[in-house]
Image (cartoon, rainbow, N blue to C red; front, side, top):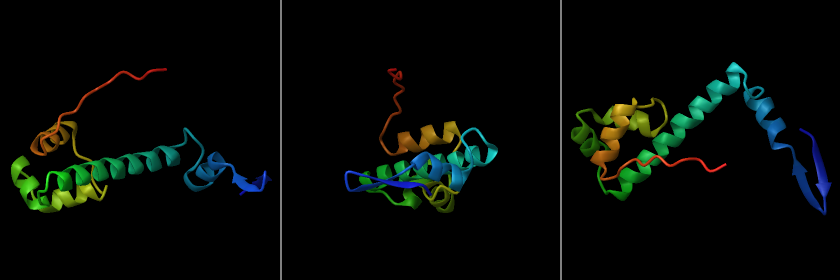
Length: 104
Protein backbone atom coordinates (compact mmCIF):
# COMPACT_ATOMS: atom_id res chain seq x y z
CA UNK A 1 0.00 0.00 0.00
CA UNK A 2 1.44 3.34 -1.03
CA UNK A 3 1.57 5.85 1.81
CA UNK A 4 2.75 9.42 1.93
CA UNK A 5 3.08 12.06 4.60
CA UNK A 6 1.41 15.40 4.12
CA UNK A 7 1.68 18.02 6.84
CA UNK A 8 2.58 15.28 9.35
CA UNK A 9 -0.59 13.35 8.46
CA UNK A 10 -0.08 9.88 7.04
CA UNK A 11 -2.20 9.44 3.92
CA UNK A 12 -2.92 6.48 1.66
CA UNK A 13 -4.83 5.76 -1.53
CA UNK A 14 -8.21 4.26 -0.57
CA UNK A 15 -9.00 3.36 -4.19
CA UNK A 16 -5.80 1.31 -4.36
CA UNK A 17 -6.76 -0.47 -1.13
CA UNK A 18 -10.22 -1.28 -2.49
CA UNK A 19 -8.72 -2.51 -5.77
CA UNK A 20 -6.28 -4.75 -3.91
CA UNK A 21 -8.92 -6.18 -1.58
CA UNK A 22 -11.89 -6.50 -3.94
CA UNK A 23 -10.60 -6.23 -7.51
CA UNK A 24 -10.57 -3.34 -9.94
CA UNK A 25 -13.73 -1.25 -10.31
CA UNK A 26 -15.97 -2.89 -12.92
CA UNK A 27 -14.48 -6.37 -12.40
CA UNK A 28 -16.69 -9.35 -11.48
CA UNK A 29 -14.86 -9.62 -8.13
CA UNK A 30 -15.60 -5.98 -7.29
CA UNK A 31 -19.26 -6.38 -8.35
CA UNK A 32 -19.62 -9.38 -6.00
CA UNK A 33 -18.04 -7.46 -3.13
CA UNK A 34 -20.38 -4.52 -3.75
CA UNK A 35 -23.39 -6.88 -3.77
CA UNK A 36 -22.30 -8.36 -0.42
CA UNK A 37 -21.78 -4.87 0.99
CA UNK A 38 -25.23 -3.76 -0.18
CA UNK A 39 -26.86 -6.85 1.36
CA UNK A 40 -25.08 -6.13 4.65
CA UNK A 41 -26.10 -2.46 4.54
CA UNK A 42 -29.74 -3.37 3.80
CA UNK A 43 -29.71 -5.80 6.71
CA UNK A 44 -28.33 -3.13 9.05
CA UNK A 45 -31.05 -0.68 8.00
CA UNK A 46 -33.74 -3.29 8.67
CA UNK A 47 -32.24 -4.31 12.01
CA UNK A 48 -31.97 -0.69 13.16
CA UNK A 49 -35.57 0.02 12.11
CA UNK A 50 -36.81 -3.14 13.87
CA UNK A 51 -35.04 -2.20 17.07
CA UNK A 52 -36.43 1.36 16.91
CA UNK A 53 -39.89 -0.15 16.45
CA UNK A 54 -39.15 -2.24 19.57
CA UNK A 55 -40.17 -5.57 18.07
CA UNK A 56 -38.43 -8.92 17.96
CA UNK A 57 -37.28 -10.80 14.88
CA UNK A 58 -40.03 -13.32 15.61
CA UNK A 59 -42.71 -10.63 15.68
CA UNK A 60 -41.47 -9.07 12.45
CA UNK A 61 -41.42 -12.49 10.81
CA UNK A 62 -45.03 -13.12 11.88
CA UNK A 63 -46.10 -9.73 10.52
CA UNK A 64 -44.71 -10.52 7.07
CA UNK A 65 -45.60 -14.22 7.00
CA UNK A 66 -42.06 -15.50 7.33
CA UNK A 67 -39.89 -17.02 10.04
CA UNK A 68 -37.32 -15.70 12.51
CA UNK A 69 -34.38 -17.35 10.76
CA UNK A 70 -35.20 -15.51 7.52
CA UNK A 71 -35.22 -12.15 9.36
CA UNK A 72 -31.92 -13.07 11.02
CA UNK A 73 -30.32 -13.92 7.65
CA UNK A 74 -31.55 -10.64 6.17
CA UNK A 75 -30.26 -8.60 9.12
CA UNK A 76 -26.85 -10.31 8.90
CA UNK A 77 -26.64 -9.64 5.16
CA UNK A 78 -26.62 -13.34 4.32
CA UNK A 79 -29.70 -13.02 2.14
CA UNK A 80 -31.23 -10.05 0.40
CA UNK A 81 -35.02 -9.76 0.36
CA UNK A 82 -36.89 -9.40 -2.90
CA UNK A 83 -38.23 -5.92 -3.48
CA UNK A 84 -41.77 -7.01 -2.63
CA UNK A 85 -40.57 -8.58 0.63
CA UNK A 86 -38.54 -5.47 1.44
CA UNK A 87 -41.69 -3.35 1.09
CA UNK A 88 -43.60 -5.75 3.39
CA UNK A 89 -40.82 -5.54 5.97
CA UNK A 90 -40.74 -1.75 5.78
CA UNK A 91 -44.53 -1.51 6.15
CA UNK A 92 -44.52 -3.98 9.05
CA UNK A 93 -42.01 -1.74 10.81
CA UNK A 94 -44.21 1.33 10.30
CA UNK A 95 -42.05 2.97 7.65
CA UNK A 96 -42.42 3.88 3.99
CA UNK A 97 -39.93 3.96 1.16
CA UNK A 98 -39.47 7.23 -0.65
CA UNK A 99 -37.61 7.59 -3.92
CA UNK A 100 -35.92 10.92 -4.45
CA UNK A 101 -34.06 12.09 -7.55
CA UNK A 102 -30.29 12.27 -7.39
CA UNK A 103 -29.03 15.81 -7.65
CA UNK A 104 -25.97 15.97 -9.86
